[in-house]
Length: 121
Length: 167
Image (cartoon, rainbow over all chains, first blue to last red):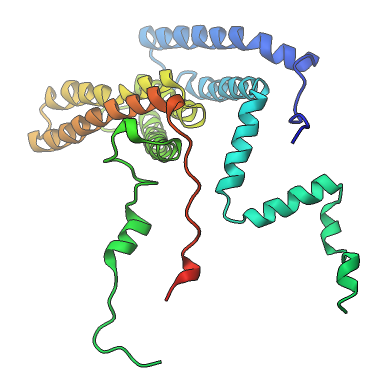
C-alpha cells in the first residue's frame, strides 16, 4: 500500500497547539496536585478537590495519548496493520475489502454481479 | 456409524490447554527471554486489567471511607496507579511499569503501619502479606517483560481454527 496513512497533519494549527501545550499541561497538573495534597495535609477537608483533580487527570491522560497518536510512526502503523491482517481469522474477507478498495468500489459494489457471473444464470 | 462402547472419552488436557491455560495467552511459566510480543501483550493486558480494576475500587473505597476512615492520600495514589495501568497497557511504557511494580511494596507498608501496628488479627495480616509478597515477586517479571518488550519477536500467526476439524 503506497498511500500514506490518513491522519492529522503535524503542521495544522490545532495539532501544533496540542503538541506545544502538552508539557505545560502536565507540569501545571503536577504542580496543582502537589499544592492540593499539601493543602489537604495541613487543612484536611472532606473530599477536598479530589473529584476535579481526577477529572483533570483524565483530560491530561487523553491529551498525552492524543499527542502520542498524532506522532505515530507511519512504519509502525503499516507493520501493525499487517500483523492484525495476518492474525485475523477472516483473512479472506479482509483480502476482499482490500481488493475492492484497490479497484475503487464501494461497500455496496459487492452486491453487483460480475459480468462472468451473469453467464452462469 | 457403529456406536462406541463405554463412556465417551473427554480429552481434558486438550480442553484445558484450549480454554484455561495455554502458552499463547497465559505464558507465566515461559522465561522472559523466550516470550514473543503476543504472549507479552496477553500478560501485560491481564496485569493492567487486574491493577486498573483493583485500584479503581480502592479509589472509590478510600473516598467513601473504609475501616480507617476516609483517606485522600490513598485515593490520589490509587488514581495514579489507574493512570499508570492505562499508560502501561496501551503504550507499554517502561516508567509506568516501574511505577506499578511498587504497588505491592505500598500495600505491604500499609498493612504493616495500619494493620499490624494497630493490633489487627495477625493471621489475616499474614495472609495478606503473603499475597503481597507473591505479587512483589511477580513484579520483577513484569518489569523485565516491559524492559524487553521492544526486542521481543512479533507473534506468529495463529493456527487455523480447529472447530471445523472435529471428529
